[in-house]
Length: 195
Ligand code: PCA
Image (cartoon, rainbow, N blue to C red):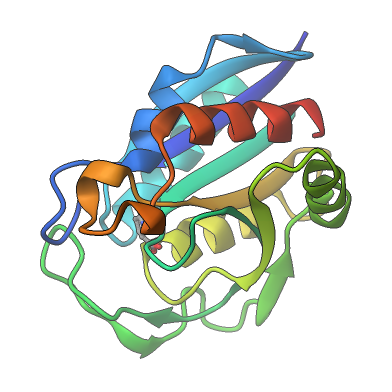
């Protein structure tokens, strides 16, 4: 059985839950060919990557699938690329707000996801599941975790991908701006089966 290290984040800003961790936690331990290893990461620059890379060194996963929340869509967004930049639009959970700072001085400007994002989006959309391509993951902690994992595993057989999940109905005024947790976990399982 293959190993999938799958992560979500803890809450940040004014939110009291983070659907990314709620959805990861709700997944079964086995999905398709994968045994899941679940990990909650803190929304803190640098610390999040240290915790992830330490756990990945222990688990030795075939795939690392990182999840975070994003208020901008009612679909799960499969990320194409991580950028070598920290451009925080709000403070992390330790009050840091880096702006215009490279994640790794002198390292590549960007990494593409090494999971098959285009195939996954095409296949899941054909199944009428709410997914879309997201070209980059922003400049906040989600981008950093994606970049740090992609950098650490570049040129190896361990594949790395990042997914933004929508907010939950209880987090928004207008329910049409959210996706229920069961839907998010269903789509995450469909993604895992395509890895
Ligand atoms: N979303 C943030 C960081 C943690 C999370 O769940 C982001 O999109 O960068």
